[in-house]
Picture 1 (cartoon, rainbow, N blue to C red):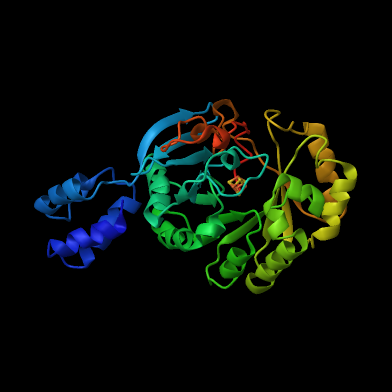
Picture 2: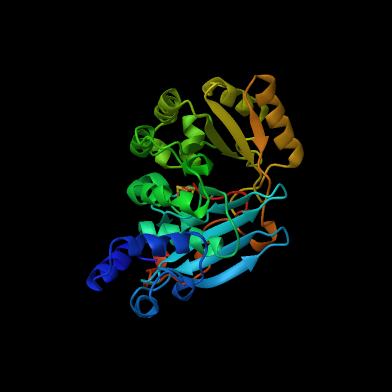
Length: 349
Ligand code: SF4
């Protein structure tokens, strides 16, 4: 729902300020439309239904995995593609992966979104509407900004959305913002005074390989990024999660695990190893290699987990559905996206 349009419409209708709050409270609790908002006059509900679309996004397609994962491709009002994923876990957690941009201006080589043409930053309402779509299906309790785009490049909208998420059932402590190492954003988050989680997509412990996988490393080198994350930890005392996608023969060797140990202070960082499907430009490491890598980290006192894969049968990684869609504006042949595939667990950013 376009919250600015809502407020303007209510003001133009001469309604008191608390009406916007009433509409938001219903929406955040999963209301399916204005008609159920029984503490609003019927005439006002009818006017809102005509003048303020209930969502800024329309569903283009939805895929459902055998494990309960739901992946949705939306279009914004201007036709831009937006993807979000609901992950259901056996312990009852319901985690939603949100996008912050349509496409992404960065070009990480393992990422489907990175092969798409960049569209634009999403608005706060477009970010929230992804979560609200799933909230209408069931209660949600975690959010991760690991969908399309680099959230730190659209931090105003992302933080504004985060301020509203507790009303949907997702506290700040259960909200994680994942970055490839966009230092200005990390620094702003450090000073934001919100107990949000920070996750860093690292994927390599040396500059040469990291630049190859993530060209943004040329702009913000590894040591500077880790120093910014370390500062976040010092100020907030909140562990920084290191995302490390396991690519066979690329970053999964014994000495690369030792290099990771060298650059990460176990008091400040915890590692999340991410299995990767053997498709596209890279092959994913086998389970044995992942377990061996994890064992090296833990032998040296670095906490490490292996991410549960979700939605592998529906190609649920962010960017995959959108990369397969025609773009909303003509693209010259030389700029056409190259489709790469990733597993559900290797979400963007
Ligand atoms: S991993 Fe994140 S930052 Fe990199 S291209 Fe994909 S969406 Fe963009």
